[in-house]
Length: 173
Image (cartoon, rainbow, N blue to C red):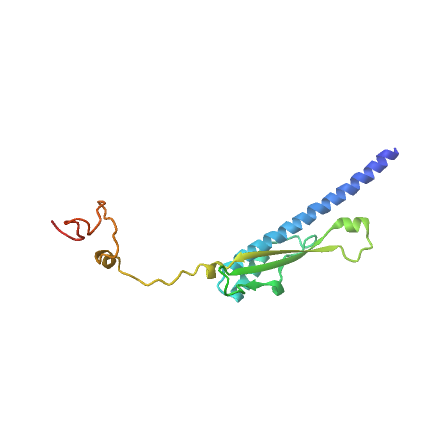
């Protein structure tokens, strides 16, 4: 009978710890998804204020239960939008934070003042709008470039203009 009681106590303790681990991983996963989506949303913005608003809206779209896992929030003190103008690829850095309350702490030690554990996640994502600015090219006339003789491009029939006596662009024979 004693081994049954000890085994039952051990099984209950392991079950409570397993439930806590599942709740913590669920909260961490929710915070991770919110941070990733907030960084992606901020990376598509063209300015810092728009990026902040996009990050907050993307983070708010990840709803939690509010009891075991608090709603993830964007940490504005750790927000960075393309800070280095000399960087080859401008980056956006987002940090989200949430609190995860674990019931096992209350189950085993009800005297703890706070059973909420803070979870934070940081993502760095390229600022896509700033990174994809195409270089400014001078417009040019393709026909004038080909007929001037500066470039030898093959014609549809495979001949190259300027090679041979009768292979002139626009000749009518």
